[in-house]
Length: 199
Image (cartoon, rainbow, N blue to C red; front, side, top):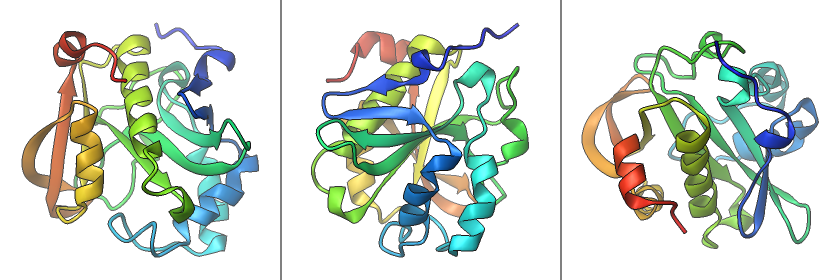
């Protein structure tokens, strides 16, 4: 049986950020991310504001006692929402997360990936690294996952740099999101334990 984490336990902090489970009140940041072609360049098609509104019911789902889902990233100094971070099932043939796997009392069948999106004004300041490192820490300290993966577009060098900086290792090109050319990364629990908490 999966224990359910309290709301407070799901609020994660880094040096400069507070990560809180995404709620319906975060449609503004979801729209700022998912409707911006600059943000979505290496991810998927840009969404319309109406599609984002419809997507929020899925974006606010929590799985495995709260451990699987999307976090909204807030700057501690200003309270500004600057992006999100995810621990969600990675789709292989589909173009989007299979949200039917995100249920309260079970872990998804698919592998869990770490991911992040930032508004352009927050790029190049190390925030993606903070989000990724904190979610990896959470995954290996608060879940039973034996491995966390990540996928990027082969041309997204900046995201690949974030992943390797956080200790994830490149696995090469495999299928994900319906694309045969996704660049995969992974970190296992023994690798995490040998590394310690990323700074």
